[in-house]
Every structure is written in structure tokens, then in C-alpha cells.
Amino acid sequence: MENQFAVRLNDFIKETGLSKRKFAEKAGISAMSVSDWTTGKILPNAESIFLICKAFNVSADYLLGLID
Image (cartoon, rainbow, N blue to C red):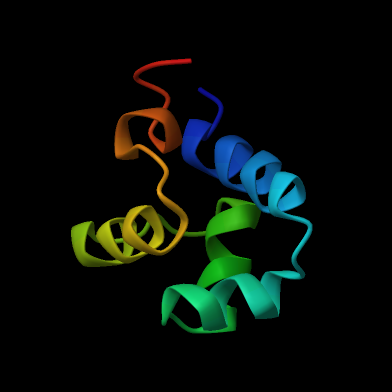
């Protein structure tokens, strides 16, 4: 099964036009974590998903692949 979060996060970061490092800074999370999530190495915890959603006004349901 494909890691839907990694796919969606990669696509979303591209849409923002930010580098992964700048994306991480804006969300208040580490750049290494963002790198690990976008490669599918690990999944984020709920707090990290919350920080991304709050910083970028994006739905957690979208990032998790529950809605389009």
C-alpha cells in the first residue's frame, strides 16, 4: 500500500512553492522530520499534523488521503 500521507505532503509542499526547509520552518517542525515524512520513512504524530494544518490552512483529512 502506498503511503498516501507522503504523496499528499510532497504534492502540497510543491503547491506552496516553498522548499522543504522553509515549509518546516513555517510549520514549526524540523526539516529532518519533513524529509522523513515525504520519503515515507516514518509517519508524523498528531501534533505535527496539527501544526502543518494550522500553519497552511490545509485539512488533515486531505493530507491523510481521506478526502480529495
